Structures are given as C-alpha cells and as structure tokens.
Amino acid sequence: MLRLGVNIDHVATVRNARGTPWPDPLRAALMAQQAGADGITAHLREDRRHISDADIAHLADALDVPLNLEMAATAEMQAIALRHRPHAVCLVPEKREERTTEGGLDVAGDLARLADYVAPLREAGSRVSLFIGHDPRQIEAAAAAGAAVVELHTGAYCDFDTAGDIARRDAELAGLAEGARLAASLGLEVHAGHGLTFDTVGPIAALPQIAELNIGHFLIAESIFTGLGPAIAQMRRRMDAARAPA
Ligand SMILES: CC(=O)[C@@H](O)[C@H](O)COP(=O)(O)O
Ligand SMILES: NCC(=O)COP(=O)(O)O
Image (cartoon, rainbow, N blue to C red; front, side, top):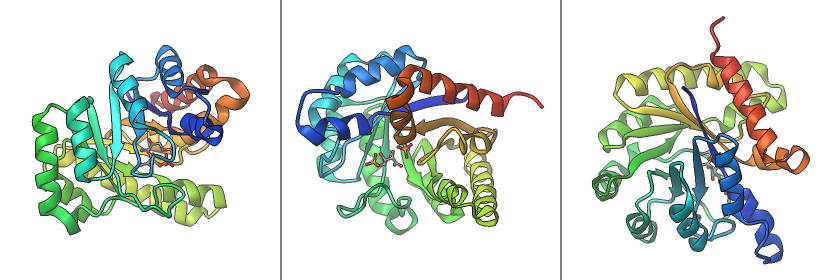
C-alpha cells in the first residue's frame, strides 16, 4: 500500500511565531498517527526555524509509527541522527535564505562525501533517503552513494500545476514517472514529496513505483479549517482513489 508520511514542520512554525509551548508538534504527530498516518516526517533545519532538537527527541521517544528525520548532510546533523537512530534519515539541501526547500540534493556533484556520510547512518540502522530531482544522473548517484531510498522532489510539478502551466506540469510529471522507473530498476525504494495538495496528489500517487508520499504544509494548512484527522483522511482517500484499479 502507498504510505503517507505526515510532515509536522509547520505546526512548529505556528508555535515559534509566539514562543509558546502550543501548538505542540508532538501532539500533532500523535493525532496524525491516530488518524492513520503511516509515518511522521520532521525537518530539523540548521536554523531551527520550526522543528527543534527537543521536538526530535520527543518524537523519537513517543511515536509508534516510523520517524523520518529530514536534515542537511552536516556533521552536527549526523551526530543527532546517530543519537536518535530514527527509522529513516532523509538528506535534503538547505540554504539559510530559502523560504522552503528549493531543489534536490546534488548527489552527483558530492558523491564521495555523501557516500562516506551515509555509511554510518546505514550501519546504525536508519534507512537513508536522498531528496533529489528526477534527473537520471542524480538517481544513479543516489544508488552509488549507498542510499536505500530516493525521495523525488514534486515541487516544480506542483508549482506548474498551480500556475496553470499545463505543458510544463505534464513534462515535469513525465520526468517524475521516468525517474521513479529508473530508481526502482536500480533497487531504490521510491518516495515523493514537496508541495503536494488534494488537487496535485493524484497523478503522483498513481505512479506504481512510489512507496511513500511525504506531505506536510498543505495538510497543516487544511487542518486549520477541518482538523488534522479529516485532512489526513481526505488525503488518504485521494491517494487510494489514484491507486484504485481503473
Ligand atoms: C524536503 C522537503 O520538501 C520538505 O520536507 C522540507 O521540510 C521543506 O522545508 P520546510 O518544511 O522548512 O518548508
Ligand atoms: N519531503 C517532503 C515533505 O516532507 C513535505 O513537504 P511539504 O508537503 O511540506 O511541501
């Protein structure tokens, strides 16, 4: 079954806006787990703009579903990951000035360093995922680096869809479909995420090689109006409908 990982970063964004203890990302994660999330994703950024070190400790201690720790490929983050040994570690590119993740990791351009970086995380028992674009060179490099998983960046596809640029959206979707096929052929588990909404999730969920979607910002936004449980349930329905036999 196609798994849904719920990213709770932006519960922490709301909390940090006032420096109060609420809303608590752990409470959101437990509610998401109760609502059927197959996993929880949390991005510990170097600037801690949302998720904190304490959030990661609380999640690692309390969750019954797998924790997917997103992080930059730095020494600081590697030590944190080795301390908590989450089910999965997803390496993502980070730039201080970015509003959100802007592209995929350049694995091909940093292969030797990333292969060395991945090894202790894998040996500690975490499944290592690399957050990349659908460029075949990046997918092949991810396999060479020893990752177990690639997560394909769906941000451009979502942006083109929102902008109504159908030709570029369809070209991006075709690239993602081809990337998923190539990744699976190389023995990589294939995930996807970034920017997915009720309206854009279907064609991505329909790609048969994809085992997991990680979705956050839209679900947290939707939860303001409907509650987190109903938002997750609706996303689950959209994902299942996309996978249902024609
Ligand atoms: C890698 C990715 O697309 C997201 O999981 C990431 O967490 C986005 O960063 P923000 O949550 O800070 O927007
Ligand atoms: N890796 C993608 C993720 O965890 C959630 O991204 P978004 O839905 O918050 O854009």
